[in-house]
Amino acid sequence: MYWIEIYSNSFTIFKTLLYIYIFLQNNSTVTGSKTILICDDHLLFLSGLVEILKKFGNNYTVITFNDSDSCKNFIYDNTIDVFICDLNIDDVDGFVLIEELKEHLKNVKTIILTAYYEDYLINKAEKMGINAFLKKETTAQELISVIEMAAENPFYTNKSNKRLTNDFLLKDENTINKFKLSKQEKEIIKYIIEGKKSTEIADIMRITKNTVDTHRKNIHKKLEISNSSSLIKFAHENNLFI
Image (cartoon, rainbow, N blue to C red; front, side, top):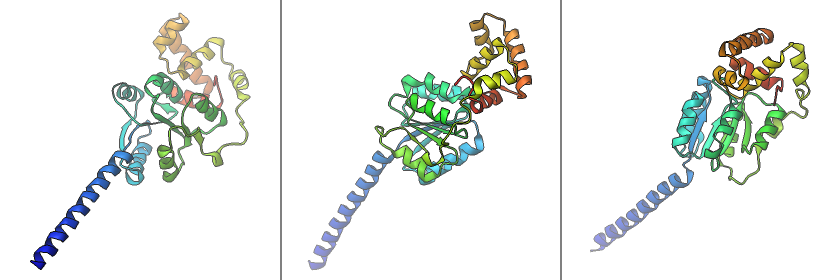
């Protein structure tokens, strides 16, 4: 009888510990799990970021897209907790993408993770209500910390890395004059930065698509760039129309 009583008590303790373990595991999954969507067209960086979030994150579900259209379609149809976005995705400005998705990101923590780190970009992100602006050199620990920050926390950026002065604030007109861009070319650059296609630009400016394409070729030649992605990068670096 004595051994039966010990066995019964041990079994009861074991069951109690098992229930506690199951509860803690389930509770951890519920409170820690977040669905994170990343939009970045640099595939090597993207795969590395996913591995970091899986290794150091808190039960994250990570979804990735390397094009803006797929990213938009997913957000339209699904619920996410965190949106991490580059500033340049397949020729689309990240700010433009976030603005287009504004209604769907009201309850989503939005983080810009970019190679560009000028003050005017950081200021623009803050004015747009974006939660954080981080450089791609950000450590895993800091990124996880930002992801886990409370929604009511103020705008966050890597303050220690932030430039004290903005060397590009006055470059807008100087750059345009230097490269002798025409009025129409300047207007087309603005629309390209906004993410508009040649057909859309043609409709807005009331000119033919061929005319727009010709202007685009001239712009590429004058600025010594090869595509729209390079143009958007050039615009960011030289504070064009920001």
